[in-house]
Amino acid sequence: KEYIESYWPKLVRHHPKDLKSLIGLPNPYIVPADGEVFQEQYYWDSYPVVRALIDHPKYGDLAVGIVDNFLYLMERFGIVPNASRMYFLSRSQPPLLSSMVWTVYLKTKDKVWFKRAISQVALEYDDVWMGKVHLRNFRYVYRGLSRYYDLNAVHILAEAESGWDNTARFMGRCMDFLPVDLNCLLYLYEKDLEKAYEELGDVKKQEKYKKLAEKRAKVMNELMWDEKTGYYYDYDFVNKRRSHLITIAGVYPLNVGMATKEQADRVVEVVEKTLQKPWGVVQSVRFVENFQWDWPNGWAPLQVRTIEGLMRYGYNKLAKRLVSKWLACNIKVFKETGELWEKYDVVNGRVGVPDRYPTQPGFAWTNAGFLIMASVLEFLEENMHERATPVWLVRRLGWL
Image (tube, rainbow, N blue to C red):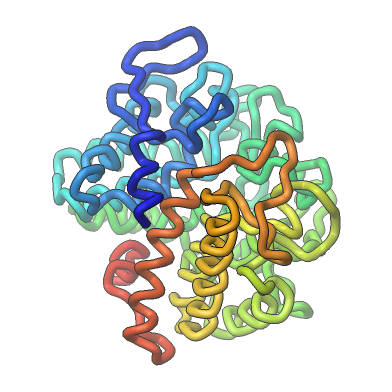
């Protein structure tokens, strides 16, 4: 924790004015790593950071400022880009703005801010993720569900929007798939917007998003749930068939509370028997080598999603085991290298297998994930019985 605390200042940047391709942002922000590769505010990278720092005595305001930067990008460009570069305006990243807005609102209770922020969340949902305009936002494609996309309409760039660049998960045809994780996050948007409009007293909009969430869950269970294997898969809407590749993305329905108890039981069985490895949960079964988002790597945000999904359905013992494995991996490699890393090989307990660029040290979401996981472990050690749920997790996921 001392290492993490000393590392935050290395990751803070502030560029209030546009500079060549770099988009100016009103507030300081955290970059993923202290190096030449990452100098921008990234979309989905920022979510664990906001979660970890929102209650920090020194960096709490920075966490709020990061979210305000995303609202600024929405207001200026009508999209939250992959990161704050002009050339990233062709695509976004996994949608997490609704979660970040709720994180800030639960902290500040500023209703005026919240109303403005939610209007931008609703705009992003409607215009970007449910967009139907080719060569703009063409993500809504089949039975109310969405895909990843890029303005250039190139599969590999759409894969970059997924955050899973690179992976064999989409078989080089990313735009042909309805990803289970993306549509779970959009289900979460619908639940977050339903809850937001209840908070703001707009019953009509509250009911609208409630119905949209119910519809999405129904279609997703029809297309993505496989009764035979007891797991969720991406759906190839072009060829009208489910993918057969088991990836950690299939845990998202538990994380957002969309699965039934019976479905959750079966997903947990797959996680425990197939994706659990000596040092955490692996990204996928072993279907390819040396893509950074596949076997044998594990990434902090997906570890957090998995353990919170398990806890949501009461599997606290398995959650604790996975938290302990991941933290042990982080600590083991830290003792060996003096750094926390962007990703880890959770099969062998070492620095993650690189792909397009060298694996980065001191990575923001790994640092943030460590803090989140440490607080989860503290809770689980005090509440060993199954089904005990921490209040902060209950509030974040909207169970109350």
